[in-house]
Length: 112
Length: 111
Image (cartoon, rainbow over all chains, first blue to last red; front, side):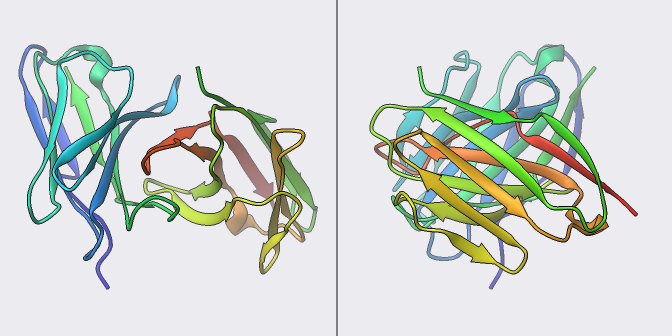
């Protein structure tokens, strides 16, 4: 059974650009959550999607957005990139409330 | 605001030692507490705890939840160098599958 797949694995972008990251959940999982991990702040929750609807949102600026498609695949977008957006972005999928979440390998974003 | 605090932040032990990692939480409408191990990138799931006092075990790892004290511990016995990792504690939000994480405990096991 395939795990959570995130693409791309690595990205280098320039300040001011925008970026789109992709996450394919485990087959059958309809819930997808996104997290940002930095050395100083640890793992911080960005947003959660279930059946194409955003169910929860963390405390991040509006430059961070996401969506989920009918096949449960999810994308997150960061516009007007800042140096501080450099981080490991992790996606997790779950069967639903009360079930554990499984993480992908992450996308390492570097903003220069 | 929901909060998860882990201690210690880092720990260095020798192979064979037993370690106890702590996690305390302040959340509204507690539902579950989860432990993950992160070695390189993807955190891997260890335990999910929902009921107080019931120990979950997997090999040399075990964990228990104390709802009265709003805390949990993760025990690792007979540590091995392969246990070196960041151990993350998280609580689930009331409505959904999102997780609020602590900063993690970095465990280093020397041979």
